[in-house]
Image: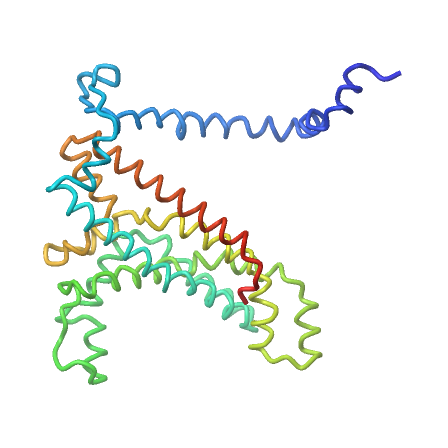
Amino acid sequence: MKTPAIHYQQKNPLIKKLIDQRYLLMLSIPFVIWLIVFAYIPLIGWLMAFQDYKPNKGFFGSEWVGLYHFKRMFTDPILAPKFRQVLWNTIGMSGLGLLIGFPVPILFAILLNELKYLKLKRFVQTISYLPHFVSWVIVANIVTAALSPTNGVINEVLLTLGLIKEPVNFMARQEYFWWIIVFADIWKEMGWNAIIYIAAIAGIDPQLYEAAVVDGANRFQRVWHITLPGIRATVITLFILSIGNIINIGFEKQWLLSNPIVAPVAAVLDKYIIDYGISNYNFSYGTALGIFKSIVSVTLLLLVNRAAKKSETNIF
């Protein structure tokens, strides 16, 4: 005779599944608590975006102003032009980095996979990882030294090749700043970002390559028809995440590599939030900017994810 508990489990598959995975659920409890404490409870601070928040009055004593601070982003004669400028800089740098920087780790992982000498492959792989662990402070000094108009290696090479007639002060030219940021970021993160693609390539069945060789496929054909389709899901997933983070560019590298001459093109949204929201004690306006960032990120993530699900055509 079945006990009531067993009978209830059989009628409710969800309960049975939860009981079967009870140990995994118990292991996840600390992470759920961490998420609630450090990710969800702080969202109470979003209330400041809808108030004229005063620290001495707190949440309950501050005046409610609704969407006033969100309107200021686009209509305030002083704040709106600066907001549009930093938003353009943020999207421009992120978009350029996505356009150039996103395919580089994929190409690097494929080229690394094609190396037949295991020791050389491991050496190149290890060397490519190292810049990721280097602080942006050090990277900024390296970039500044390399681009120096006096003894920078870039100017020396260009002069030797006859591409320029006199040294160029790249760090003082606004038209070069975005490119400097993008290529510095690629150099620093290329090897690290390639790890997941290398792992995806390693998961492709070797028999597919063997069959392709038997059929007479050359190396390029094997990459195009086996490697790229094999990592397509990984590429799409990381592309979606990259689009979602297009507005979350940070500010460290821009701040470290900028100077007063390039400041107009170096200002980004995160630095703007710090300057106007925290440094000037405009907590409500700064919080509204943070919410704007979150809304844009989530919207882009959902749109790209939906487009990826609807698309049934092969990318490669």
